[in-house]
Amino acid sequence: MTDDLVEFLQHAVRLESDAAEGYQRLGVVMREREQPDLAALFERFGEFSRLHLAEARARLVAALAGRPAPVPTFRWPDGSSPENPLAALDQPGLDVPRALQMALALERQACDFYATIAGQTRSEPVQELAQQFAEEESEHVSHLERWLARGSG
Image (tube, rainbow, N blue to C red):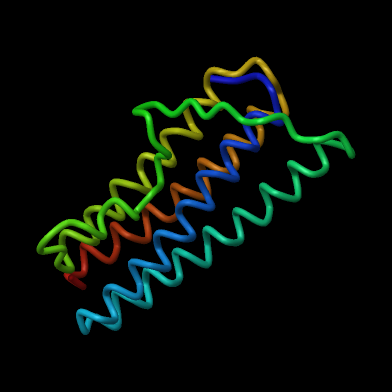
């Protein structure tokens, strides 16, 4: 996708911002549906995303070194940010199992997005960061798989 560190970080900032906002809203929806455990899980994932967002923003500021940021041109594999749970909010019948499966699919998409960049870039800094971000998303995948395996849904 990219060999440009700033472009990669702009994508990471957008992806994590979408995830943070979406998971926070999903948490609210699940609380409204009287699913406090799932609400807490989504709120936790929102916090993970906010931490990733802060890291990506700090790295972007450092990479820009005082220069203005170029206007990003987002290029996503399927046209939209890979980790955006906001789309699920309008799904009728978004029950616990479907919400967990949707979150798992989104986390896998984010992991695949970063892993693909890590595997395709010729830039060592982009490759290292993309691999780190893929590993972090992989931990989220594992966490959700454990939730699903124990039947918490």
